[in-house]
Length: 256
Image 1 (cartoon, rainbow, N blue to C red):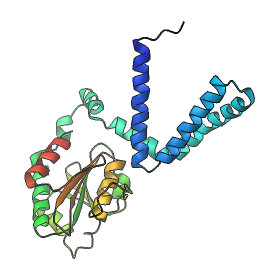
Image 2 (cartoon, rainbow, N blue to C red):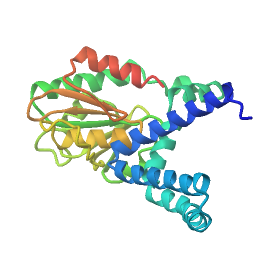
Image 3 (cartoon, rainbow, N blue to C red):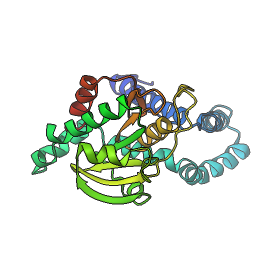
Image 4 (tube, one colour):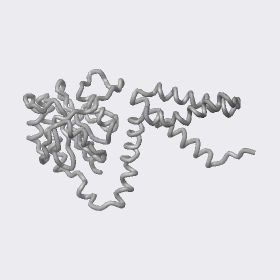
């Protein structure tokens, strides 16, 4: 007789959480229909082989499933990569890693690194100067840096404002800040195709959303049209921020 215990409940809950997380991931990447198709095929395979016990059709579907695992890895390689990134950059995982690592105090972002960014954003906001600043955390942004011009300078308010000045050749791209230094400017970011992004938000906001979906980076946007400041983190926008709110978010998110 089949016994249903606590382990079975935990097993079902884990599978449900995993499927829900995969569903959200597929929805963000516009692969939801493909994911639904895969799930329908799996349900049909289980019904044919386990319930109806149709040997011939079941054996054919068994072969397709065995080959389909490789096909799914190829088809969803970006989604799998993103899942592993999110898993590795989760705060609870990071806290465990920090217990076994040394020198973490040197990696903590202090106010001397945050305040020049906040002051530059507020100044550019008043002048309606468009800007896009990406702050690297645990996910390396080397590929993004290679698309721009290397600067490798200390974080400085005037330097940030000069780079994004309207006549500057680097003002259209993104600035990448890594390890308390301005690493590069004029960088090209992946653009998000999420349909949930409000239409009034421009290309800079879509680029900020794109990099926040592909990594754990914090992306700051200053709108050229309205002067409003926004922050994109893990695929979520924080819009119309004041100086205090921007400082609070950066202090919380960059204290890794």
